[in-house]
Length: 358
Image (cartoon, rainbow, N blue to C red):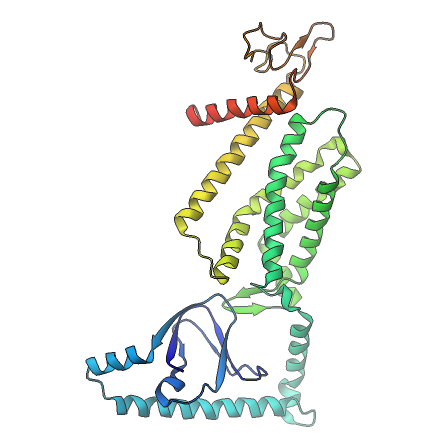
């Protein structure tokens, strides 16, 4: 090797070439790779990250130039690292020997730690790689969750405000999405490993406890929206809007996934994107709520913002207005134009109000 590394943040594990044993766990402030740098020997072990890490690389040529510039005796440095290398080699051999002995049923070490090691190994074997933090499956799963939350945040209030009265059945896609979130609730409470203090936790009890602290109750309540199949007029679909409170955590997770895949999004771009998104969602919700008030609360009121909004200069509540008043039944017709035009008009009022008064 031609370089050594310094661990700024995160945690790594030192393992032999076969990956059978964890020889050491290194945390922030540690360094590794010095053996091949000073002794010109092949690397005897591998280093694997168990959490997201920031690592600095020191190239061999740069290091020796700096040592010469500071007039540091290279021979003394070589002796120091040779002694450390010998000590680490003896320690690693002892660890591997003891671990091998602990797996022999007749040995004392087996009765002390062997059973626990076997149990731990079984737990890790049961935890599939796809459920580990940073896996491609977790990335795709989190992306799907975030996309569905955004979908619900847009269409739930939109359908309440602008859907035709005869269309009161739940959408098939909504039912599929609700089923997906029920699966999500199960996986996050039992299978999705997480990192704590730089270490990956895979046991189900710890996973459940962590999930309960980070939003399990909120997710469980929002899953009740699937009961809209049984009672569509109760508007249980509104419960799915609770998931929007989880969006910041999903934005953070997606950033971590992208960083792991060497896709960096600057802090300013990240913040600007969030501001634009939440501003757009807020305008959309205000537009929908504005029309909901006209449609459900002021149905028997002849003078509303919709009946008085007449782009073609007609008298309020007549043809040419957003909504027309029916004198016979004492109600307005909700939207005299098509619902798309009514939504765009509501959105226009929302944008102008929030951008000026708001």
